[in-house]
Image (cartoon, rainbow, N blue to C red):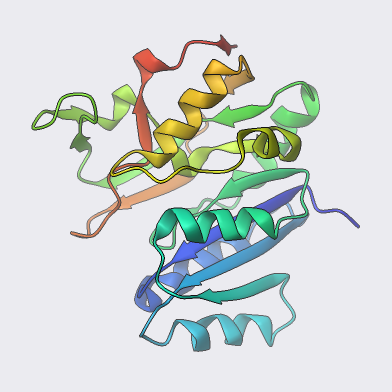
Length: 217
């Protein structure tokens, strides 16, 4: 049976927090998902962490690759996806238990939606660098966050995945969706938990709202 969601988890040396992310996926009230963990050349015990979950029969694929970077890892996960929609879970973040269920309800109500985004709870630093004005910090409330993206599989295919950028590959993906005039919807149900307590928290999972445009509903 085709799952509603393919959840791509790209990770690199985050075994200490990876279990939290995976457990939040396993504990979803919606069970129509597959997890795809792409290990981008970790040197810690990431493999063992995921093997423990797989041995318990959870629908999780584990893929190892050399250390090519986050974009490569996410694209590898996308290429292995079989779900109707592709979404992301960064390995230091987590989902509230109704995250997938709440998004499925929205997507079932309007099957024309090609990109759904939004709905985040931020823990830690709420400011990130502005990709358009180096040296300037902006509030995440002014941004859309890449971890919250849900893309219809055919829409993701038409975008050909993420592109390598010095910063803002998720922002670039969103901008290309706008350029293609995708049907885009925003939700404010705050079920994606974005952890920003760590020094290595990724700072490019967003694009300023004034770039959203397109067929936003």
